[in-house]
Picture 1 (cartoon, rainbow, N blue to C red):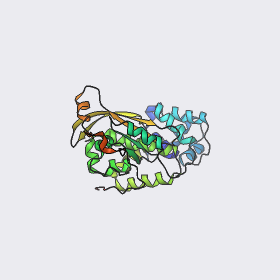
Picture 2: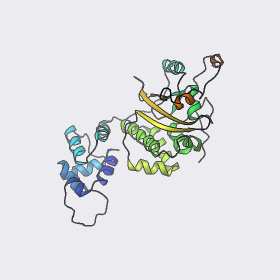
Picture 3: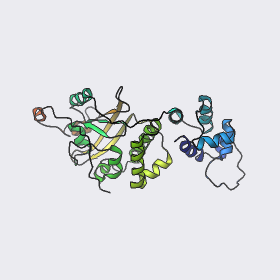
Picture 4: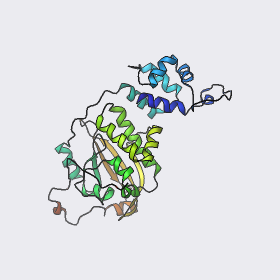
Length: 288
């Protein structure tokens, strides 16, 4: 993981970008050579090569900062570099939703909401969340969000031609993978997506890095029409990567009025406390 990230960031730099003279010589690979980057960072070429081969062992903060400066990383990339270098091997213990978070979803019945697990599985959603994102699936489904976005045509149509959403989805998985090296379930998910989606494979290889805490996007809902919504991804304390996702519109806007009808029911009592569904397994009906 660390080596992959270093290679992609080295490849995007040109000698002129870092004050090196370029004599127009042929370069077999794009970007700086390893020895050039090592010189800029103040480390030996052999040590830097081992870092790109994920054989560098523990890397000091001073070396990481030197690499960040040499690679011209922005703040998000710098943080991600430290995450990769310091991540501990993760386990893949079964994941469960805490009862209190099920109750939390039940109370959020005025806005679409769901809870994502550590592998971006939908652990639960409320009626509005389901009606906004996947009205074509059964309410008690437990799909994986990344698989849905890249492999389900109806979910993809919800976002139109949004290249940012595709990049954000991959960047989010990159962040998760960086924090969870050795997670076999996550590795299998990523491998499946790379084999099933050429778009995912291309974006994964580019190694995008972006914090995915909130977004404002345009949705093309099959029933409510065009909606401009903001989503907030809120980490749940003590839950090892689980996040609450809430969607809302600008108060008084046309989107807010349209969103009010998504997943609404005239009789609250119809749900009889079953507004949130959580199941242990799900095989999504994916159109490839």
